[in-house]
Each structure stands twice: as structure tokens, then as C-alpha cells.
Image (cartoon, rainbow, N blue to C red; front, side):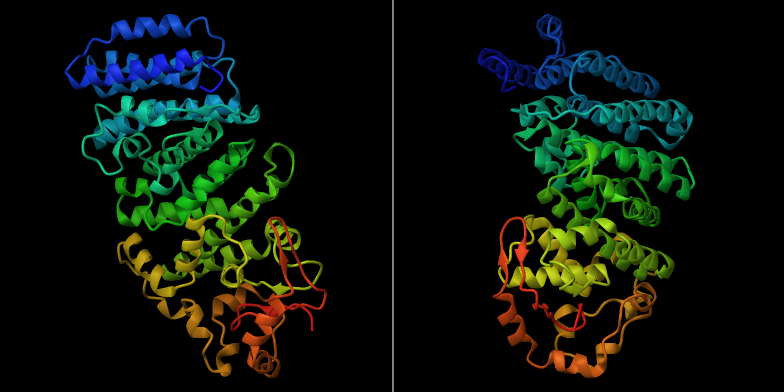
Length: 498
């Protein structure tokens, strides 16, 4: 509430403290609190997010104690949604989305408390409510504006909302308030965050919640993929779009999805594949223009994260003996205009000189190699760690074994990519031994003769070290001598011109 009077901020902090103390002491009547904050908010054209959250929490606590039936609890969530809407008529689109966090929180916990039969009986009501929320979000994304206000006391507000549920669950109050997200993503809003960051995280939650409900109701996977791809495009617009995509991609880089706990291992693996198909098939060139435009730094981070997801998905497909999907993912990488443009304009190559990247794994290894030589490629430590794990076969073998419940994922281990360091010491005769997947997915890539490969390997470390000194790197670009052809270990890249 940085644009609000200091006394209002102090009043909220003191009220939160008093409410938590009263609740902990067994109080159940919060009507005095409700009355005070209703009179405070009513004349405001655009109430601060914190006030709206606190007031809506008070109304929920006052109503919740009288409700026990599942359908009544669902109605409570619907009423909360309407309350949030009525309190934010003049708010920006970004703020309207961020305000929905308590709605998603209550909705999720109500649904997971339903038994299988209750969820079946209330399926129509559940689907209707989630579609209303999604429709509202889409409208908000069409009219997004930049939002500068900071949320100054997220932790305190989360504490208020989770008093009756946090118990001893892992992740504390924030883990309960944002249960559909991973720790890496939810910790972005710990303490203090921008409203647009919170909005992006809410979009992530809605994405996973909607997908899980569609999956649970038996919607055809092809239909789900198409529908969720459209969702990704719509919600990528505006300043919150980066935080949504960043969170979504990062969650796919973790071995377990939070919603997986609600599903069997087999269904969780199928859901993961559905999301892989969704995020890899989207045309991300939309991020280069209009309201979807992202700054060069943010765009670079998204492209790196997307490349990591493509490689993770490719390896996942191989381990589940799904060569068709593996080839499809690799083709998507090769055909990505966004990656090509980024490599041309923002990465370490200029003009036509530079490595001829034929796979997502090759790009990842090349970027890691540059990082090892002192260039700041990975601004995000999480992405850097994920990159190292992804190019290590042992790391992902274990993770996919857990993700897929150990079923069939090691059957195709022979086609798993060789470890990066091990390949650097292989006999040169192995240089031309590329697995069938790489052969199928990179048919357009010119091959390098054995003689050239042998000459390239000899003394390549000295050549690499010498040539890398010619790089001049800053935050936006790296200047390269026209004659420079970066040479990396093994068969990671082919020199583009000789």
C-alpha cells in the first residue's frame, strides 16, 4: 500500500495482529472487524489489495463456521469471488488477477476435501465456477496495465487466511495458501512482491487447477492440449505474462508437480506430458510485439527456461518409449523462430558465424560452457542448476523413475544422451554415433566429416580458450570477431562455416 497514508498501513498491521491473537484465543465472532473495514473500504474507488484481502477473510471466517455441507462450501467460494469482483471494479487488470489468490486458495481446499462421490455430484457446479473464474481472468488479461504498487505485508495476510488450515503442513502458511505451486515459484511472493508478480503466480495456479479438473473429468487429452495452449497465449499478455510463463516453465523443470499428489503416478505422468505438449506447441513469437512484448532480459530468461523444458520433455519421452513425442519436441525447438532470433540478436553469435545448434541439449551445453568460461548467461541460479541436471543422464534417470512410478521409463535407457564430460574423452570414432532420435530430428543439419572432426578435437581446448578471449560481453550482447568460430566439446555443435 505504498500510495496509501501511513496511518492506514499501520491500522491494517495492528488489525491483523489483533485478529490473529483473537482467533488463537478461540474467538469466533468477528463482526466488529467486518463493520469497521466495510465502512473503510466502501467509499474507496480502488481499495488497496491488502484491505480487500483482509476484509474478505473476515467475511469468510464469519460465514465458514456455519457451513458444513459440500455444496454450501462451494457457494461460499462463489460468494467470495463476487465480493472480490465488486471490490475491484476500477482496479487495473493486473490487480484484479492478483486479488483472486484467496478465491483460488478456498476453491482448491474445498475441492480436495470432497470425496470422490461428492466431486462427481457437484461436477457441474465446480466446472461452472472454474470457467467463470477463467473467463474473468481472460477479460482482465485483455485490458492489463502496468501496476507499480507493492504488496507490503503478504506474509501477514497469508497468516490470516491460513489460520484454520495451516496445521503442520510443509511450507508453512505460504505453502498452504499457494498449494498448487512449487516452493521455487511460491517463494517469489514471500514477504514483499510486486502486484504483477502476484498476478502471474495466480495465473499459474488457475492454469494447474483448471487442467487438473479437466483431467479429472475425463476430457480428451488432445482437446485439453489445444484448450490450454490458447490459455497460455491469452494469459501471456501484459506485464504479468512473464511471471506466469516463468513460473509455469520452472514448475515443469521439477521432478514432481504439486497436483501430482492428487493423482496416481501414471495419471501424473500423463498430465505432465499434456503440459509438455501445451507449452512446447505455443508460438512464443507473440512475446516480441504488442502487449505481449517482454524486455530482452526477461525474454532471454524465458527462452532459456523453455529450452530446458524442451530437453526435459524430450528425455521424458525417450524414457517412456515415446519416440514420436521426442521427435516432435525436437522439431519444435528447431522450428522456433523465437530461439533463432534470440540466438542471432542476444546470444553469443552475430551475423552468420557461430555454432549450428541442432538440439535443445546442444544449446544448453553450449550455454553452460560459456558460463564456465566466465560469461554471465544464467542470471537465474535455479535455471543454472536445472541445466546442469538436465545434461547429466544420471540425474534425470533418477527423477523420471520417481515421476513415472518406475513404470517402463528405463526400458529405453540406451538412447539416453551421453554424459557431457564423458563424451569429451571418447574415442573420435564415436563422434559420428548419434542416436536415431537425433538423426530423425536434425536431418537438415550438415554433417562433419571424420577427418574434420578429428582435426577439430586436436587442441580444441587451446583453441577454445584463445578464441573466447576475443569475446566482449555485456548485459545485452557479445561482440564477436567475424572470423571467430567457437568450438566446444565433442559433438555439441558443428562449426557454422569453414
